[in-house]
Image (cartoon, rainbow, N blue to C red):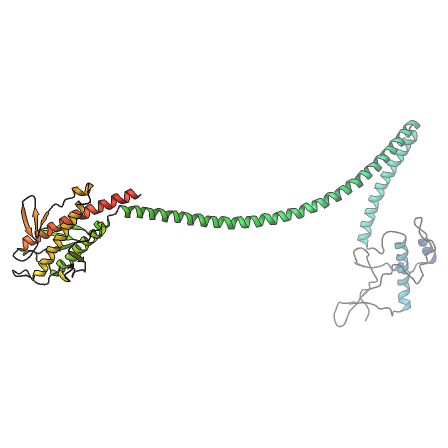
Length: 426
């Protein structure tokens, strides 16, 4: 198969394939001798282009078909025909010769050669201008007097000395720069360390600030709780426990204690469980007042027991009930009446104990005077019996109402005495 395109060399700048002119393969000896002459001083004139050793040998390449494909590259090895390679060897020696006499490797393509020529023209023009300026300077120096030349030489020497001094100063400055760079590196390390410490400080600061905020919130919460507790304490100090626990009032003709009616009327038949519960609250109130002022009754002991409260007779092992279970009859259980009479005696003893304290207590007086089993109304001078036997429901209910009124006065006096004592302690 005949090669369609043969490529022997490539451009040494752009590496593009080069098509050589056929005349390069047939150079006579005179032409080779002329080309072997040195272009400038320093080139060896004894260069033999037919020497087997080539300094810059460019291996040939051939573009040919490869296989069954239309295009492909095939590298020609070292085993090639001598008749075909002899012209190639001549051209290669020529290019090696030209490359040895210049600073540029050959061969070059047409475009690269044009660019190289343009660059050389520019360099030549610049060199010519420099040569012209140097020539003018030389002419002006030749025309200059000897004194001026001496002055210029002295100035040149001074500049040389100045240059030496500046070089010494530059060397010292460089040494100082090295020292400064060393110090700068230390400072950079110190800066990095301080930055790490600053970052750690801010982390700790944020952590402590968060803890401080939590503690301040907790402190404010505790202060609010303390303030609330103190307010509650002050309110409780001013609160009358007896008034809160035992609320004595009235409901029509009935006296009431904690909304429990004490008494019974034909028009308003109160149930006995309510009456018994009211008596239980009444017994608990008098027992609490007596215990608060340190009173121990001489003949009786009050036993609060809800709706089955009773009075125990001291020394007789006998109980007097303060609760009932039947209707209002003419013949009644005398124990219930005896219990109510004993309770009335305890109220009278409570008054005597308070009056015996002296001072303001001597002026203490119940609104309804107690005389045995009667309660007297000072406004009408009427006496109401506390007993149910031989008594009407209206009279008995009114007597119980007077009894609760007396207990309310006693309750008020004990509460005021307790409040005064608490104020004195504060």
